[in-house]
Image 1 (cartoon, rainbow, N blue to C red):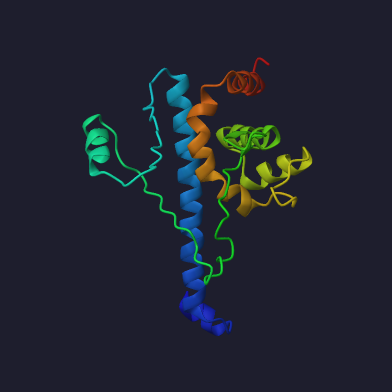
Image 2: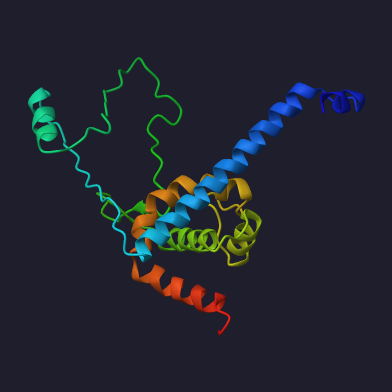
Length: 198
């Protein structure tokens, strides 16, 4: 293959590297689809999935290692530590330093104290999930989202890359989606559409 590329006047190594990355991207997309499909089958097959509870400790005084020991003894696992400091007047805030991405499908509530479901984004996620479980191609998902008037947060139409980048979010919300009444209605609807008797 390298000889063919050289005869065509193309550098072989960069193209081969690009092909390897493309194959890895295709493989990870297929793996994500299988994972979402497996989650859906497990939930509808009656197999229980692990449920993780999360809690956030707000530290108002000096930190004590006893908190970690008490939580660990109760079966909790530490998943993150968040640090903050007051920025000195002599330092300029870094660009985007105070930005924190709100997960797609959520928005800041009116009382500014919590996140709540963003109805339109929630519907977009639900449609993506439905089409992925039905084994639609990324092009088909993009086409359906855009035809139904869904847009990305910045107002642009959806693209294949943008939908692919939503896979981690879909995996995160999948178990909750699959237990919802709305998903059950959608599942029955596309099961009827798939049925030869329909």
